[in-house]
Image (cartoon, rainbow, N blue to C red):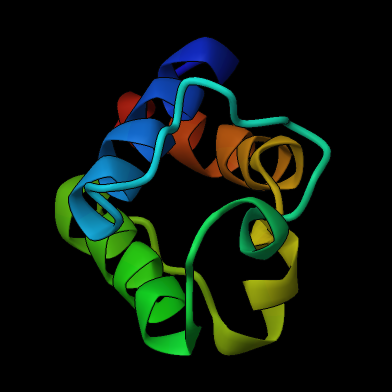
Length: 86
């Protein structure tokens, strides 16, 4: 998956977790928690959906890398590219 595909995948996951939030105005550099009504359980849901949908394991020590759209895409791009090769 490339960066735009990953961004779209994250938007889809977020739309399932916070269906009432408007995701069309998401700013890539601003942390999700400043833009959306996310709590710690919602964040864990994002991690679990990444694992369920794309078989991407995110270790707990890397959770900070998923703070914003830009950092999430940058973190996931090499991991999801590797999955395509399998």
